[in-house]
Image 1 (cartoon, rainbow, N blue to C red):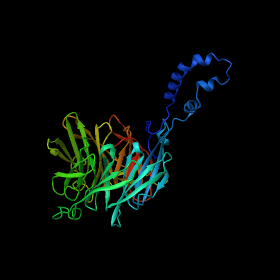
Image 2 (tube, one colour):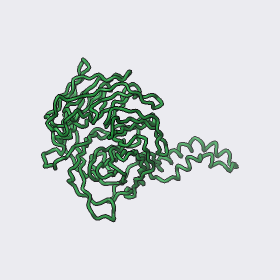
Image 3 (cartoon, one colour):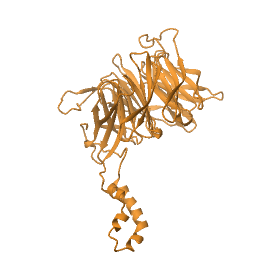
Image 4 (cartoon, rainbow, N blue to C red):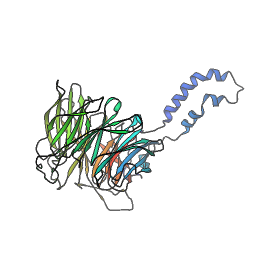
Length: 448
């Protein structure tokens, strides 16, 4: 569906045909063919030879661009979405569901794409137990998905990270199962269990309703591809593993202890600048962002120097009880950092349905610029996410589009983004999806 609101200039994404680029190709092709063609003046098929059918069709094609996205929902579906952005007419952008798959299981929670292999991975939390699931699917050009393999795993998988030689391993974080798994993958997409680690707490944390057990929440591959980091919301630590690139084993080493106690670390992201590596951690329970400088030690361990702890909004604000920070990402140029906050209902926006005058209560996406020398953050903007519960969001490779998974509203929203300033500008399109939307990702050869 197209989104209401002001005009926002779209940029080319996905599979796009540029008329200007096409005529440049035609000119180059002509320069190689004209002499031979003009020597055969009586040949009535000359222009067919000079302009191959495919090239002619490209030149006449519409400049509208389209790309695919995948969205997961607790309703038990992976929905393939088609986003179309007519060149120069962002107001006519559309987002529509073109395919659905139920092969992930009843409670899909996370999606990860290996574009080079045409594999999509999905985690199923398995609310009804006793197991969760990990599924590999093959992506098809028409947007459909073909089941390759389903594997029973520890209950509650909520995130995974690809690692190992050729990306043949998957590290999986299990929230309700209090564990971390290593899974091997064959070139055909088969899945094989390599290792399981489960954890218990000696006593509940400061927030006993949420920290009654270990709750690993995300698996993150470090920039050197030698370590897997797993923020554990229940234990107030980031678990760290040496990742064997060959046999995929994960060896636990000293964790990062997150202060203050009760923070509830959820997700994190790395940034490398020359000889420095930064790690930014968003904590759900404390609603904070913590910045660290990462030290790679000679004994193959990691050390962290805390640089700052700031509220997710950059300054202290009164937040409703139950507010929970969720996702954190860097922009593709790594100049900006964006976090999402849930259950605030702090911004009212015009309803996407033009026939409905009731405003939508939205949570915010909060953008920061990053100081390359110090790693410090400066708040740039707060922007309405398009509804309630932005559990996860993705940024496309060009950096000009943000797709938001709105868990509470059952909606995916596409937001126009200014690459230079980092500012989110307008809603381009949206689509309603049955159930609680947990993840949305672009079908691109790009990992955020």
